[in-house]
Length: 536
Image (cartoon, rainbow, N blue to C red; front, side, top):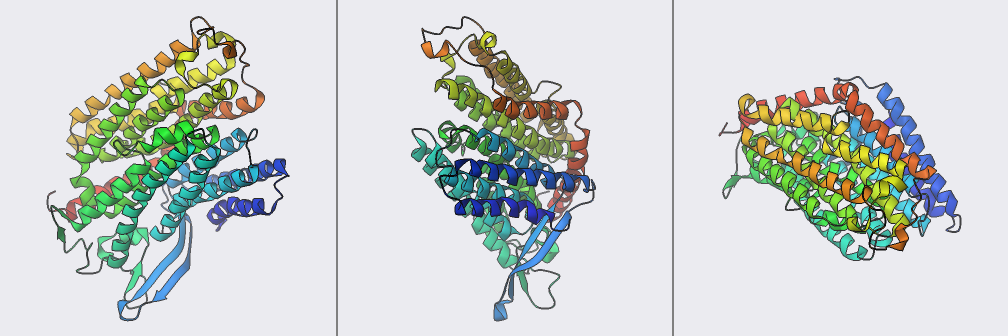
């Protein structure tokens, strides 16, 4: 039980290594290996949840010495293998395992070179779970970087006709964000001392130590008690901005989003599912776990900027989705809009807003997986993603139509689905923010509500265009016969539909996990931020 988080990471990692030892001709064995690995993860996660105590802070903590280097008069370099889960990371690890299971089923047929594909898939699985569990900045950064290479190859080898362009663009954007994060990590390493060290100076990458101002070394570049000014901002403000924009690329936030539509359009269906449901959440997770707790005063100072970027992302993503002719591109831009709501909840600095942001991360992970599987179902049958080339599908594919209605209405934020709960909490926090803490004005929340209207518009337009009217479109013969969902597709879509409905009608179990984290997060942000900031 004590090492359960390590097992969640180790199982897919060992599976990836085992796949390399299997002969390429044994194609079915790779699929079963991946399925067994994720199923074991799911069993361990159920054990993890059943033994987790809501509101108990970090639990299932594992901390062992990883790197220790004597630097002489400069002190000691220390990095730990440090894992733990709380009310934010636990739901996201559950989301990661659930989505990876769905993606494994989605990859069951039609994958060329399954040896390479499933090796990378399992490696990506381990990196995602490790990122959500790591509490040492260097360890987090290793997992964060490990996600880059598997996804680069999964897009570049198993993608569409422009896969090389999309994968290189994804790589360059993500690498830029990684460099910004690396610069701040080095600055924090130089500035933070481990208070548990037995005498002498011990440089540490421990995120929890970094969040405590008393652990900073006097007169270092990021010392909150001796502000170093670099141009218009302090060094700590620059560090926050580097972290914010580094993670915003992954979120993605407008205008740093342009890699996402290309990556989604060219990626295969299971890779799109993983990309939208999980990798985008790493950006928001990094802000919640690293940028905001370590630099709370800068987070408060730049709250209006963050809220403005959030509103721009919400509206721009929704309007561009409305103008998209490609179904996958429309869904990709809807992700930009929905992740903008996460950013708005974070900017509000309220318990409701932060709770809603984490809830929206989980909800969007479920719904985006469902949406991209829906797009993949049609593409597998026709090789066509253009919305205008479909019509009258409701009569031809009734079970598929039912799943589309659930996914589209849930993504609109309709009651009885998880999207409604997340967006409701975010707007409650955004409207409360000005009166509660003075961070963002109500006008930004009012403008953001237009995103709900635009979201309903492009989803309803797609339903009307694709599922009603005359079936035959411009004499397109390949649309004359479209089989309804098969058993494998039902096995992928039905669990996602059930989960979004359960979280929509009975959100309390998930809120019980998230709320204690959100309360502690907001208390730390407002208390430490106002102590450290001369402007507040």
